[in-house]
Length: 329
Image 1: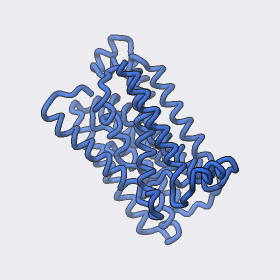
Image 2 (image 1 turned 120 degrees about the vertical axis):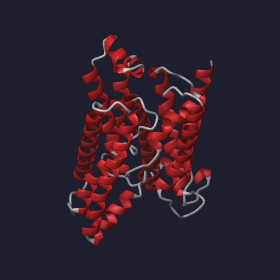
Image 3 (image 1 turned 180 degrees about the vertical axis):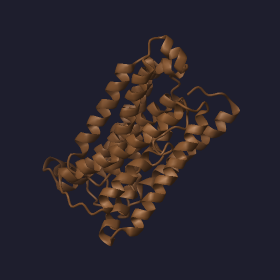
């Protein structure tokens, strides 16, 4: 019964946030004006607010799913796209595209960014996976990921220093992260990424639960360790890479969402945890987008500032609580 109530509450919350996203903004409207513009396909709603709301929901769900699967793969509660350097890898490759001044337009520009981000995220994930197979302590893997992130950030700084003004302006705008900068094919790519992630979880099923009990135990229950790792590696890289390509290097959502869900939903089985995670991630994404736009003002806040304010307390709570009790992740 409790599970049903939680699902209903989260679905209502997601719908309320979605409506609030498209209903309120810098342009004030009465209810009659809003529904009139909605029916008439007004560009303010259909070209800006609706794509931003859908992007925020899909990106939030994708990042939450990516962080959750990475924490399962490494059996570490602090694993996430930003902590492990995956976001930095995507950012560096996107920087190469944007700062090099390639002049693609339309769908080609979108696909170019996605391809660059995926190459960066997969490259970092492969390095991390190689290191994790050679060291015993998972904390070492996290430190390695952080160092990779710093190293890639250094290369990125060199590219920024050598870039022209126009290219630099484009990259800085992308680097601040935003759910509102819509590109051709963006929603379809985000939706396909999410469907791929959900399909992978459904296919792996109980194998994800077995993996948390240890690699040897999972192998004894018939889990093909190599295939399992590669599947999660590919999906996590794809989810994080696509979101980074379109929305910029969004901080903390991937790391914090699984833990935010565990605060109110204690469910050890992955398949039962999935829908709650997706709804919470989508709601968190829309809430962050709503705060960045500040409907009561014409100002816009950087997305990463908002995600850091909301995500950092969750991670701090995790670190404090993990010292007091043994938490199962």
